[in-house]
Length: 115
View 1 (cartoon, rainbow, N blue to C red):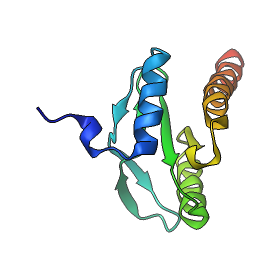
View 2 (view 1 turned 45 degrees about the vertical axis):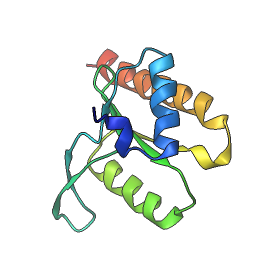
View 3 (view 1 turned 60 degrees about the vertical axis):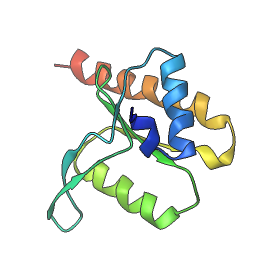
View 4 (view 1 turned 90 degrees about the vertical axis):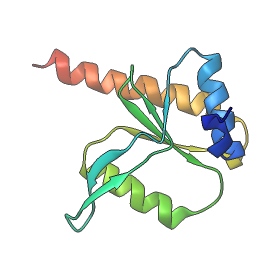
């Protein structure tokens, strides 16, 4: 039987397993509508979406700085919370990911609190 894991890179599998170990539910490559830096409509499929947290994750399994900077810019334009995880830099990504999830929700709380 085919599995979503069959389509994942090794880096994506590491992130999927880490999320599973922390009881964080995820959807793999859930499409999202964005407007790019030239105001053109696009449909992207970030690596992971955490539906209970409303956060996207892009797994950076290799050094491709220009690609990631462009994607980050487009996500910022669209005000979409995304965390770029650089798994090729060692295991530091695990604590970074948890810290960034918490930071996104702290920022959300400040917005809601001030309503």
